[in-house]
Length: 96
Image (tube, rainbow, N blue to C red):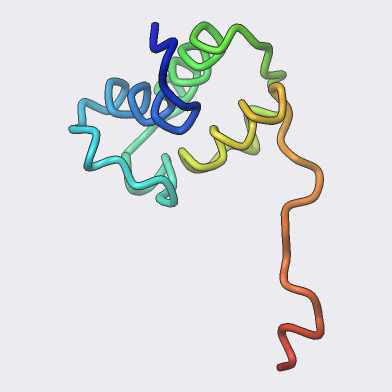
């Protein structure tokens, strides 16, 4: 569908379409459940659209971890799985 665009751009397109938004209104860090007003059916449809677009499998237990559009990008870039370890600040950085 969007062969020459990045994963990020394709996810933005899917989210914008699902929630009837302009592309520039998609905030990658806002939660689907609150900011976008998503319900469980919206989330199922969104995940199905992503699965179809990127031709990958997102198991239900992985889909449940997706809270934001940024999470969707992470999952797509990780082959349908939520990354086990996300970058976190080290204890040294936090105490500085």
